Amino acid sequence: TWTPAAFVETTVAELKEKIGTEKVILGLSGGVDSTVAAMLLHRAIGKHLHCIFVNNGLLRKNEFEEVLHQYKDMGLNIKGVDASARFLDALEGESDPEKKRKIIGRVFIEVFDDEAHLVEDAKWLGQGTIYPDVIESVSATGGPSATIKSHHNVGGLPDFMKLKVVEPLKMLFKDEVRRVGASLDIPAERLGRHPFPGPGLAIRILGDITREKVAILQEVDHIFINGLREWGLYDKIWQAGAMLLPVNSVGVMGDERTYEKCVALRAVESTDGMTADWVNLPYEFLQKTSNDIINKVPGVNRVVYDISSKPPATIEWE
Ligand code: XMP
View: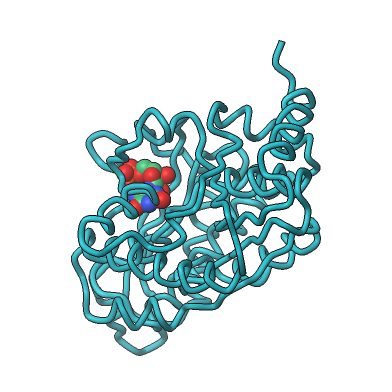
């Protein structure tokens, strides 16, 4: 029978054998798959694993600093690269959802390629690919593999793509990845993290992206997600987040009329992201969260809750 401990033992031995003393480069996202792949490789080859964690300026509030710190505590040889300005400058003025995804994919590849060149004599590219990624290799949602594919068609192959590929989780399902992660002593908080899309807040800010909008949405999202944690709801939900709508509406504050932004909160139950139901959050929670957001986040005067299931709606709004 399959056990996480036996999987770790065989896989680490296989990785040692396969890689020897060669260097591996791996991009970490903060998500479960890349983190577990990194920890397995770390067990096998230690400092010969060079991890790269890119801040695209579209992560959750404080996520880059906190997750980087946690990775360092886990003993990983990791470099944090703050490329926020590069991404946000490239996105300026673009409001088409698919074009925003393409820009982010392209800049990510450029940044990653620059960083990969700094690791002398690297031979391998480590990836957190899991079994469902292999079977749906043409991702309808435009995940990282689809992004890389569309990039190929326009330019040449980026140099890091010429490396040999090592994918230690290729035969595992998500729940198995989590169990392997637990047996590698990865913090439960990291393993239980909600999925978060590669393009990050860019596809939750409807329309064009500005630094100011990112800052507003980070605050709103932070209040919502922290609230879910405080109320013991976070672990019961598959994914949650907030959307910044391209709509201003009239409100009133004191004697003043306001004309400010509206945010939509979204929380869904799902098993694989292909279908999803909206979560019946307690009214008291929604009431408290809405008040907190409107009182604490300047520029937002209205909060709505998304009660659409997938299909026909999607989880993300873009
Ligand atoms: P949708 O919005 O298609 O989302 O119902 C399904 C799941 O996929 C995630 N998602 C993405 N992940 N790049 C990603 O890495 C993307 O472009 C992307 N679009 C959606 C979404 O967060 C949800 O978990």
